[in-house]
Image (cartoon, rainbow, N blue to C red; front, top):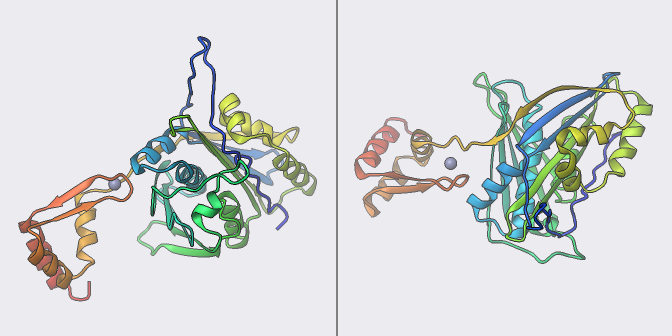
Length: 325
Ligand SMILES: [Zn+2]
């Protein structure tokens, strides 16, 4: 637990305002990416992401309120960072379930950089408390974070569950990584909105102590994490690489790689049909008797899939062949 720390410098419920040269208010968003770096002694790994574009798109698709947008943006940045820890072909899903009005927040990330996310009640909103976004109140103080990893190769997703420690998202992820995965970690996530309620800046960092980490370097980086200025300002001014620089300070490090992160839902007609099949033949027959077809809306991208009567009949036939499904 040497480096179990977390800073969330984005508590302030202020909106990002960047003045362009002509005095007109403009918000510039940099392309979304993840940067991975390692200190030269090999014991500290740093991942930083800029996720403003995908967070803006996903929060708009969800029709998320201001506080829900901040919560979801933090979740998306956290999910992107968790996704970057995966090996090729693997996936991770984060489910925050608390007793707050948001009800739940689900984030899924693929190793290739694709991220998607949704919340239980996008309209849920709370007044800021002492000038800070009330993300903890929206998610709810009591609840659980479930992290499921699909490690590919046909294996079953492997779930890890921890209690929510602060419901501020970053700290909960840091606790999961430190407690459940036994890798001392610090996570900082931040997001700001424009006056129109769109995501202006979103991003974050993940610092992990690897087994051969040098104690002195760990102390140094922990102090830098604790003293960081607002993440949104750092990201807007100097990008992901600037944040890596800021985190390492005078600790020698090397940039290992960077890759794009982006929104991709991955839903489709076949997946909708497979999901309907799991309802079983009885429920499908019931649906068929009441409606001439079925409409299913993807909770992530809000795309609607329609199944006609014939398609439902076909599913009923398939479900009947496989009792118990
Ligand atoms: Zn979808």
